Length: 139
Image (cartoon, rainbow, N blue to C red; front, side, top):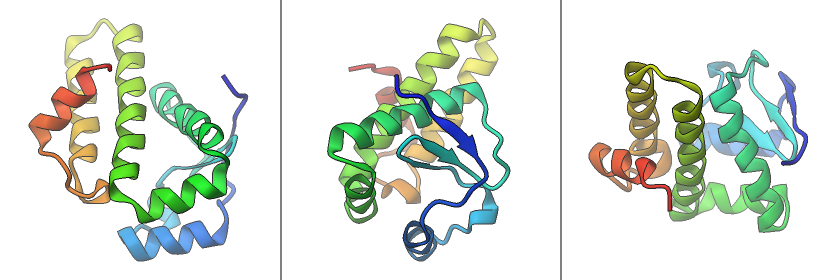
């Protein structure tokens, strides 16, 4: 696992501009960005399950040939973005299952992840029920 830094430093401006234009998301809305080994958001606060998700983005960026190349593909390709996020939500869900014995907490996390994955930001590619099933299936 690559060492990461958590910060409230902004990612490159071109990424912020593209995310604002494409998803109508502002930096101050506390969206999280992973840019190489820098995980950043407005507050600089990160939960451990979210850290598992974002650390996987660091690995994806490395495996894809670099952070800029990955971000360009992520921003232009709904299918690519969806697949990248599905992998990360699976990692996040597995982290919660491993570290929590509270079935309600595990269920609520799964619903939160599936709602996000089935939403506009990831292209409305699947339904909520399909997202739940896809996240729980760790293939």
